[in-house]
Length: 287
Image 1 (cartoon, rainbow, N blue to C red):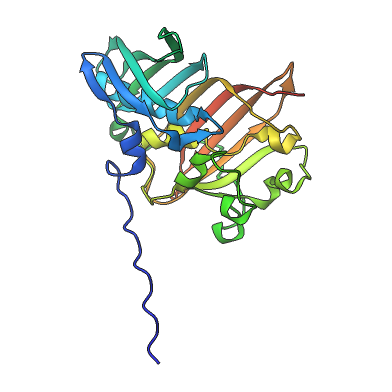
Image 2: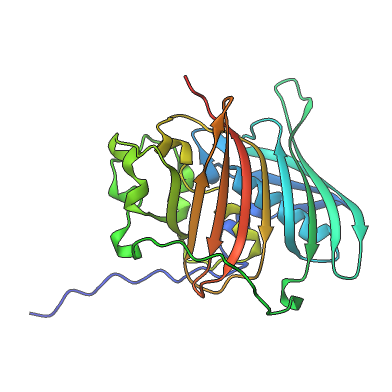
């Protein structure tokens, strides 16, 4: 009896031709001003993910500045963004031979038609391909199980419709030792680790690293706090262009006080290089 034909494998998306690229693409209205329709595909509950928003603003600055790669980008999240039309306004602060600095803000309209600023960033851009190869570091890649021994959203109960659309667009495999919260037994440690990629197979680039640092479940879950953990401020340092293949993301929280916590993230590529670091301040709702 002949074997049944296997289903064809969908081709891997490429950098520049993936859902992430389409959903972060902007239309130039006039110099320094861009229009975009924020996709509902990158939401958690009804709020647009902060890493996706940072990638949108990062793409706008990469177009507005003479250098294309984010080296450092700091964002203040002023009000929650919603799916739908938005305007990004950029301003070139300074241009130099190796670094250029710019700022950008994303605006939406409220029910009265008034413009509301959602997020404001200040960033320095350069060319990652011109950086020297010399590395002197004590940092080491995070140790956690191979991907086949980790777990993703597909391994748990079916989510409530619309609760986390972003999960369908990511390849997330979490370290079992940071999954106690999912079983109702949080460890009390502020740690979250996972293999990370985009679900359509697109390899990482400097822009998608801005998403990677803010795409895992909050470390607050493993501390024993449930609910939304909104970002107040997020700073990302991109250290080098990532090699093809899945990323490893490690996030830790050492201090929760006054209703706020920090999350320190490291992103490592398939070549065991530290490709991005970040720190964010987030509000933890304790009741």
